[in-house]
Length: 330
Length: 133
View 1: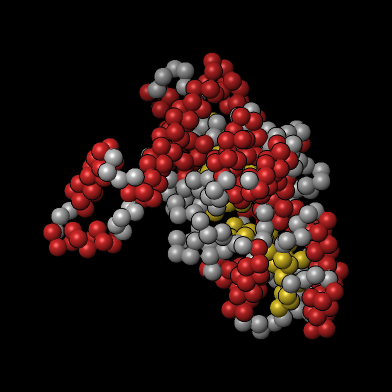
View 2: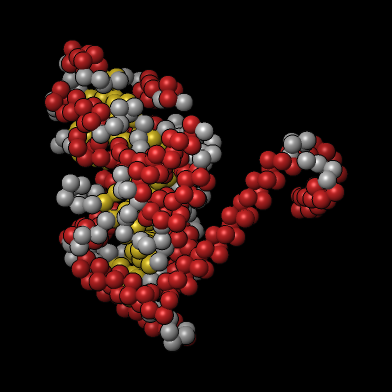
């Protein structure tokens, strides 16, 4: 099939590190092209050796600037870096203004990095469902460090923990008090905290506050767990970056021991598998079972009966499943 | 799934006036496109971004007279890097004769001079990708 041939060539070139092909493959996957699963199947065996770092933080915390500094550090240490920066899309038009590249000033001839912007799609603040897949394509193409950056609103922190090995949460002295920081998810998800814009007043207080909460959690938790580290940075002035960089590698080394990285990734794989199975069921449902009857018809039929939607859904699915098993529908 | 149009927008060179290109970017976003906003960049950086983002369109804002030197450079580099399917639009301030030259001799898809209605620009961007579907 000619269609597949085009993609085969792209996969071949991408696996050798070609940027253009890698970018095109990511696009195919992004828009759910029918060849997407072929692509993912082909590149999957070649992915897995990269180190995945997730960076999240509310708008205005200086993520992009900090990201730029970190990418520079990795590149200076001769790593091949891939970055995926996720920005929210408009829930109304689907379009997006992706501005994370503005801060990327590094000379691409001198430093080996690949920067891709992505819109989050319909998920508020979360990761695009294809972000992990795009990261894998970059991984397979030879990138050694993959950084996924996302805006810390909605469920993005949780999403990012499912997709990366190390999660870095960026706060600023204006990020609110200790109670706010206990917000469910943030404390559990972060492996490293960076208090950026630490030239502003309140930085020390935030540090102490965080350290206090983390000490408390450490007491309550198992001995072996990683105690998240907190760093003060001022990315715009290039301060604290070295320490933060070292801190990231510290977590990497922690993961290398006792097969922690493998355990973490296996758990992520399980969650992803569950999600994919659910998604596949859903797809099959909407595609095949709704053949005979559109949802509008269904609504018109049940509306006068004044039954609640959950009951309707249960009856509907049970009946369809029974039909399938009995072989009455295709 | 319908293909979203990917646009890379940049300010050519060093001029820092941003309202025009920023406004156009917002309108393109509102028309459902993914717009990667680069800020001030030079041709090589712009083309590198176009490659990485797999852009369909590159939009350039030029207000400081560099349009005949840097504009064609972007088109040329795109061709050299195997990205000739990318359409290049330019907008800003220049003599109308230059605009025509850019369109007819240097491969620029269209140049929009001041007071061009936003709708015209958005439509032009949108229609420029029809040929590839």
